[in-house]
Every structure is written in structure tokens, then in C-alpha cells.
Length: 275
Ligand code: ASP
Image (tube, rainbow, N blue to C red; front, side, top):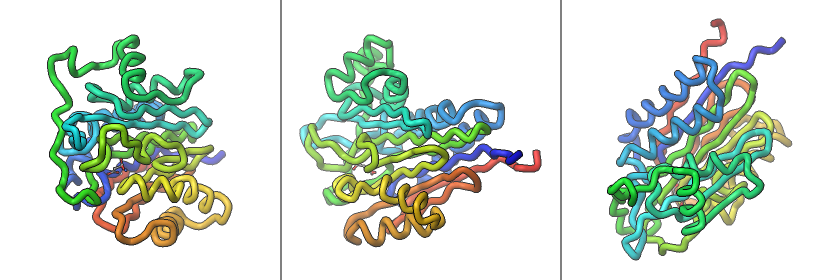
């Protein structure tokens, strides 16, 4: 019988350079300890993502970039290889949107946006920054609107072969309050099906136009090309080079891999198959 080895990969956004590497590794270690003690890929992906959302250096949750009107709005998504999906868009006062997205996995609806998303979260007692007397702090983004960065994504595989992808962002800098990026859009910012998952980061408009995560997923699945070659193909052929974009992927076996056309910190862990 084939032994499935738990694994995780996380990225800290396309563009910021390697300076977030240590912060990223803390989240990967959290996922690794959950998976090593028999936890599920769902728990591992969510808890690693929460660590990144709570770390103000990342553009997700607490450290989300400020929109053009001064608001801080967060997007997050999660998808399980069994087909379940949950996503939230432009949530106010929400330091951990990934927990709200995860709560949608077993609901009839897949996604929620803005005030309705916050109301739904309040009814389920999800952390509300306003009620707690703190607000997501928000970072002033780079003045160049095409600069993005520090968004987060995690893919985890557990010992049953279940794969889960979780992504979270405050969006790109200098975008208006109602803007929808790729992170909450299935197939664009993320795709997980069966034992394979892909997550994207970078300029959300370019990623969305390319349906990037799903296209890369389909290439790996249908052509049997490696994770790395397929992600490279996706970025080089579907994204114009002036847009910073990165991808991570994890398959049914082997470690996760990250590829980008700029700097993108990523970290990976795989359990020892001999244990
Ligand atoms: N893709 C995210 C967005 O466009 C930003 C990022 O990954 O840095 O909202």
C-alpha cells in the first residue's frame, strides 16, 4: 500500500523579497506540527494561515494594505480536494477572514461579501476587530499601484491524501474599496481538486484574466508535466512580464514547489517517509 506523506507549502507574496522568510517558516512549522500529530490538512492550512494573518508584516488580516479610501478590507478563500469551497470578499473589521471562509465549507452557499459577510461572521462569533476595540492595522502600500506583495497562501496534504489550499490578502495597494482580486475567485487565485492544489499571488487582475491557478492545475493533470514546469509555463505564457506573479503547488506526493517572476518567499515541509 502506498504511504501518503503529509506535507505543506506556504508563500508570503510575490514581490517582497526574501525578508519574510523567517516569519513564513513559523507558519509552516505550525502546519507541520499539526500534520505530524495526525491533524487534518484543513486544520493545518487554516492554522498556518491564521499565523500569517496575525503577523502584521504580511498583507493579510491584521497587516492588510489600506485601500484608496483609507479602509482595510480582507479577502480569503479555502478549497478542499473533495470539492468543497469557501470564500469571503472585502470584509471589514476581520483579522482572520480565513476562519470565516473555512466555516463556509459545509454550507449551502460558497461565498459572502462585504457587510453580509461580516453579519454572517458575527452570527457565528468570529473575531470582530471593532467589537474587540482594535482594528486591522493596515499598511500603507507602495506608491506604485502595480506593486503588490506579502499576501499569503498555504497548501497542506495530510496522511489521508486530502489536500487543502488557503489564501488570504488585503488586496493590491491603491485599489478602491469594492475591488475584487483573484484571491477569493475559484480557479484564479486558487484551485484544489483530488490530490493536487495550486495557489497564486501577485497582481490579481492579471491572475484573474488568466484563470491562472486552474489553468496550471489542468496542465499538471492532463499533460503530466511537473509542478515546477507547469507553474513556469503558466507565468511565462499566461501572464505578461510586467506583472509580478508567483505560484505554489502541491501534488499527491513529493514536496511543494514555488515559482515566480519576481521575489516570492516560500517555505515547505514534508514528513519523513521512513517514520
Ligand atoms: N493577489 C492579491 C490581490 O490581487 C495580491 C497579492 O497576492 O499580493 O488581491
